Length: 236
Image (cartoon, rainbow, N blue to C red; front, side):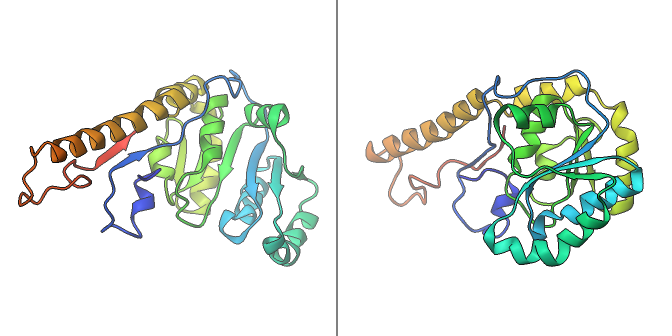
């Protein structure tokens, strides 16, 4: 099983049986019909998360940036050498909040103008993207990993490749419907939908195993318990 089609790329020869996207309880986050003026970065401070990109976007667009992030021990040197100096120079428009959770996180995401997800690695699934959609907050994200599978460009956010594109996207966020973001979450990333999709995949595998034991699949047919069913791509 994969949590995105992107996750399969390093091992295309693996016997993938389906892709089921992550889901969240429908009432975990609060939908807000309007957001604030600030950009938001949530995630670890590490080289591949590219907080520096988020800061540059805020600087070039003249918007405040709130940073809710945790620093792990293995990334502390990177933070001290590469990020802390940038934060020091950007105090006038960057607020470092630290790690958040619960109601504080819900309010922070829901009141944001947009979530910035400037990753520089093929992240299998960025959970914070669907947390933002649940709140109705659009996402501006780099075209890496699962991003183009999670976001619908120009509908629930913008998928970008360059800093210039990201800066332009900030100006276009106001045209997006926060209701459309929430609707995408409910239709594609609801926890019940996720559970149903897992059940569908495993039910097919169980049925295949039963056919094998019953002799409905011939030993010389080339079919096996794990390969008879075609890959169930884009189950969401």
